[in-house]
Length: 373
Image (tube, rainbow, N blue to C red; front, side, top):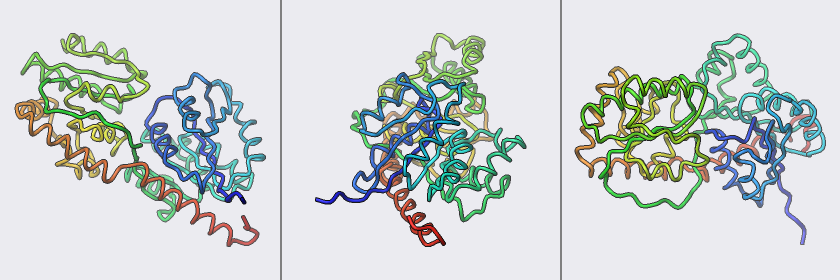
């Protein structure tokens, strides 16, 4: 029996460590159509100890480390070799180094379709002249640019002058999994998770904790994550007098055990739209609160607690404390959020659109002069 032709796709990412982009990509990889697509995953730097390295093997996906060490950029040699011999029809790049290095090289080696996936909220890329110039140059080599937030789309158009027709909104999606049942809230355990970087605003979370403890010393707080400002955050908890009520969980390989431990999740960042951690929390049925700093979060009011960004941490604590006086209402909010995510934020639906995009772009390239694929 003749084997069916499959489109060969290279997903290129900076690393296989813990992160929202990696979580999103692996959700896609779990659901791609194996009859139509052959997928290879290459990491600019990774080794067998990297968190997601073994997960790729579990999914039956070929994974290639282009450089085993972060600060030894062997990928400048190994990636061209891979592109020259890989016979890829599509290169789909993620994160900074992959986008800046992978897209130009993919075009140089005549890969028909190059897709750029923009997961990054950090302001330095748009505020720094050299970073925005480099990003704009690399984006010239992309046939399509996927963004996870409208705010990123606006900045690409405003700062880098990327044509709007080239950009498509592709919000994060989650892989399906068996979820533990949740009961109405009987504890007062509140959680937060993410990278410890300034714009995640974990200082806000700790100040909310301080005001909640003043109203009821029974509140407890769990924080999962790690990062460059970890020590200052520990010091702030001490200064606020709440260190005894805060448990630092460290960087967890998965939050599947974390979400059942908490009765409310709070997202306090001031840049992101709907990051993976927010969608994951709602998917697990955890009542979720977020500072509604943008339209994307405001539009989820009713499925989560949209905290007024013009108010203070003390005001937010009062809103949350009132909600804990009505456990059934809090539980119902969690169910509403879970239903919304299951309807609108699943990776299976996202990957179908991405696969359509691959075929659309391949069809366009094949019609160009000398563009037979």
